[in-house]
Length: 204
Image (cartoon, rainbow, N blue to C red; front, side, top):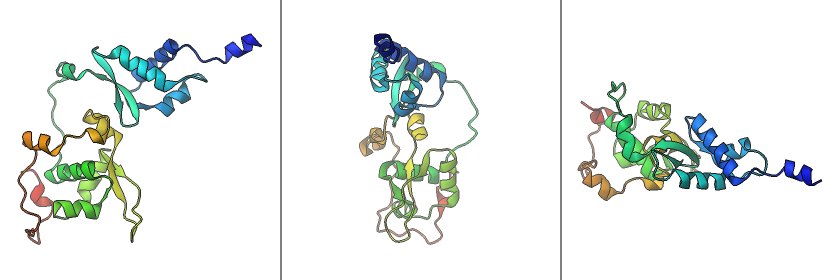
């Protein structure tokens, strides 16, 4: 009976840690705790193994980082320059797409109408389609209001791309102003021209 019990006992924590390490190194996309527990032997504690692994890699060339609700191995931020190389930029977001993405990130979940209200101009379908295709935003829950409009939220891919653990880690307004990323905008009570659409926000 004792031997049978041992057969179903979970491996020691250091073995669980090795298993989690192997899974994370074998995947390019972040892995959730639920996915890890589904792969690990019965009785394993993925959360405990992740915390132990995170502590072991602290200060190393690669680090275990949390990305939304998932985990991934990533190059230490101060060594990122070693991985950079010259590439041709094949796609550049328009100003309309950048503004729309920023509004979703800071005001999620938000509807298309709310995005247009904040920007002051209509949002073209192409702008939203581009961000959806890049998987930086996704559809959220529908609002319990007339018409039940769909909402938009940022994705785990967005957080991973910008090295954020959650949307709470987005820079504040002071940081954006200090970095020169906030343009001076006309007061909200100044109406935009009737023909002002997304085209005025495209990069020249």
